[in-house]
Image (cartoon, rainbow, N blue to C red):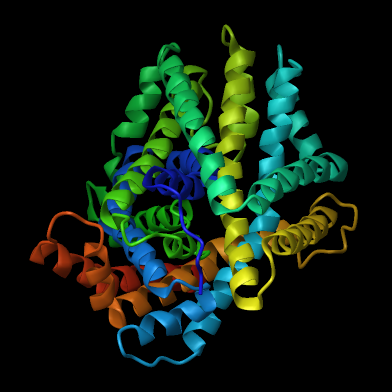
Length: 466
């Protein structure tokens, strides 16, 4: 039985928000929004987050508090508490996919985090002073094809993450989050305000906040359901990525809750903070991009190629760039810690390892995974590819497009159809006000119909449309 508990409500909120807030918010969200109409994408993203993601996070936290054990055994444990017997395949599929996703994403994620740490360290050395467009491209390409640089900075991230995890939930994850999450928000707000004073920044704000109806399928020739559906599914996929719904992290953090914790109030803060970071990141990126006439549709390179060019042309730009990559590193690191914890929890609770050895084993898996990916992607062993894709692209496609959505679908069906009554009852625990009948009906409807149907469409779209 899982006996680890959070020390405080604020610690839990900051740690869980930190698990959700990461590269998905500050790096991925702006470029996906830029490629999909800015304000049009933002509107559908907010609908997905608050109309669907909010209730899924709430349901998963309650599921975790009911289950109280690792995710593989959690399905049977939660079902037994409502006098139901379920097949062990629920845990094998749901927990197994969560474990695979966590291990695979760790190997990808730590490499991207290493880029943020590299850029932060180089900014301290004023490497980017007076950079040109060609130079920023050359710097990023040199980094991407350098096994040594990426491995070294990844190893630093792994060591820091392992140190936090070894200290435990209260002294490690919670304490770390209490210090770094406030710092993250202070840096974000400061940078967002500064970017608003760039010339023509208002053009970027208008792009980000004003919907382009053509992206939503509304044209002079009528309504295109396909265009609207494509945009909705992209927004849904981003909400899953942003809220960390495909790796069992939310369930694990919920399993550490006491019965005094108010899940509903906590979820409001977690989802609000997560969305706020995405919004502020959009303000920062699009203000900078439009101020210097760069392409908003530039894709992943917006952060690592376009922004250094922008910062090099702004008064105090090196200072601002250092702050930006520091906050990007902090956000990414808090997410990496939570993904590690999903694996560490499984090793401790399911296979009875102590925290030290569970963390060491998880870090070892991570080092092996990133080594294989770097060998494939840097050309050290160019034959380690499948077709034209290296292992980084393959794992990113498998997890981001398929397995995270399938895992989220399994959990949602289980919560909505097998333990929904218990989940709703558990949400009342620690909550001072009585839940309204409308709220109960809506969350049950969302978990039973709206969420599963959305995930099925997302998976179908990935398999047959793309």
